[in-house]
Length: 118
Figure (cartoon, rainbow, N blue to C red):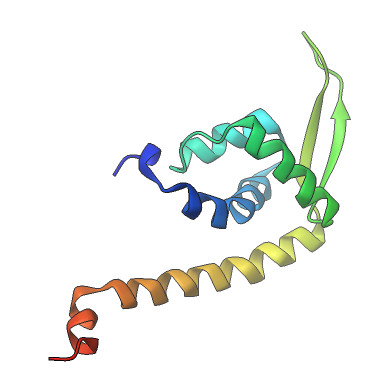
């Protein structure tokens, strides 16, 4: 499956955590966040989706944004993970991983035959 084939509802469910995950590595402006997400296999995340999400993450206190002057153009808002954001990522990342394991079991052909009445 190519990254362009991920269903929108799946991406919507995990995108906030994924953004926090890429910001855990280092601060980044929105375009760099989108590039990192694509490099890690989530496909293209458009600005109309990403920038409102970054605003919500900032409102929640999980990221901070700071305007940095541009060297050859306009300034950019650089986002970094806060301590609260790191805790949220750790907690919710563990929960997401557990959810993925659970859905893997539910969707497994071997467990499907066990739960289907004969």
